Image 1 (cartoon, rainbow, N blue to C red):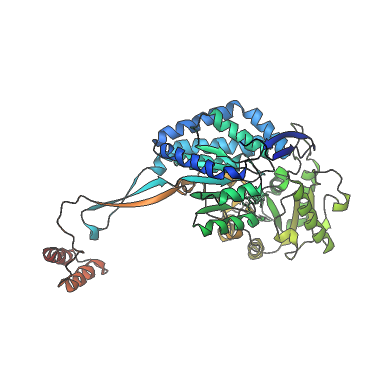
Image 2: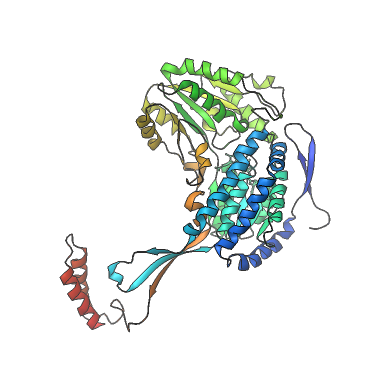
Amino acid sequence: MDAVHEKLKVIAPATGEQIGEIEETPVSQVGSIYHKGRTAFQVWSKLQIGERLKYLKKLKEIMVEEMEVVADIIAADTGKVVTEALIADIMPTLDSIDHICKHAENILNRKKVTTPILLIGKRSYIEYMPRGIVLVISPWNYPLQLAMVPMISALASGNTVILKPSEVTPLVGKCIEDLFRKAGFPEGVVQIAHGGKEVGAAFTKGRPDYIFFTGSVRTGKIIQEAAAKELIPTTLELGGKDPMIVFKDAHLERAAKGAAWAAFTNSGQVCMSAERLYVEKEVYSKFISLLKKEISELRQGTDRNADVGSMTFPAQVQIVKDQLEDALGKGAVLETGVPPEEWQNGMFLPLTVVTNVNHRMKIIQEESFGPILPIIPFETEEEAIRLSNDTVYGLNASVWSKDIQKARRVASKLISGAVVINDAIISVANHGLPFGGTKQSGIGRYHGDAGLKIFCHEKSIVEDRGRKKTEIHWYPYEDKYPMFLTLFKSYFKAKRNWLQFAKSYLSILKKS
Ligand code: NAD
């Protein structure tokens, strides 16, 4: 690195203390970092997949050994409680390594495809060819998982990776760099570019072969625009405003406990947190009492037993405050919490439930990313579906009912990348399921088979042994037109006429 460069001060959001300093990657190094990544690609992409997976297994071993250290770094850097660092950031990353190590070879192996009889004598198959350098740009809310899972997927598929982690949680970015270094990945295969949006923008313009972005809709659009100029393919994993629908026949105690967790885990800074709660009218009051009781028992703090941590990003506090003020100004009622002017506890916001809200309020239409939960009663299944689908987002949703047929019916009608029945959020924890959003929640999917295939060119190969002199569809065409008519009619009509097909095929062959 050059001698004098911007240093990022790292402040622990929960305590306000400085806990470190990170040197920014100078944008003057963009070219040399890409060059290094391209050179490394020449070797890395040619390794047998099993060889590449050995590095991932080593990475997993180191993460398991250092699990507590990593959990503490995540908790200090984000303000989330350490239990959540473990169960929602570290565990899914380790599980994705396991899943990839188990399935990657099969997913990325050459696949034979049936060849239609019209192409007699040929074979067809698909090959998966790594793209080159993948630029991963990641956010601060799950700073380990949302950086490492796309990195691991791209690496297993044979690409080299440049990660631009969030500047809001730079210690986790540094921790990821250390983990890959300790796992002994070859020089240039994984490179980390530390810094903020200027660094992200500079690397976006450095012509990666693929951009995998997780973050806000606003930045997603900027990145998509920059990528479009160079026709760089992207995956965009963006925001959410996830609905939770509670029917009167749900297990109400379970649904209330589930709502408290789904709305307030990670202080609500989850792209898939429950951000709007729709409760069937007959049980609305009862449900609110149960929910209030649950919330009254939650403990905010930084100690090992705390349930809810602090906010991570100071600017996010203002967004939550604005939404709540907008709602209260339009008649919303606080069921828990206090008005924003009475907030006193810095980055620990009151766990806030709001009623008397409607779909014209920001609190219902815009992503909150904070510990506030608006609740609306509904009367019919159709109404619940209509309200749930009425935002620009569509990332995840949950449906709560003991009538599983009804829950499935509703799930099928939600315009959403995922739906969880009688639980929330956890579809992301099954790495075999595709993950991604509809509408403004994103473009593309990862996890599952798609999570490896997106990082490859899917190449179609048709193979002929090359022993025949010619082909029937080659020149000359002379006199072939009526013969092809007979051939195709015999082949495509409802009842295939094989005798006529064979005869006309042979007569065209003779002419060829
Ligand atoms: P953000 O868009 O502000 O930043 C994300 C990343 O993009 C950061 O690393 C940032 O430095 C970088 N960046 C910002 N401007 C850039 C630019 N012009 N060019 C290149 N890079 C740039 O998002 P955030 O505040 O870090 O994260 C919160 C958002 O992420 C929320 O909207 C949340 O819903 C979303 N999110 C989505 C998912 C998902 O999987 N769908 C998961 C987590 C978070």
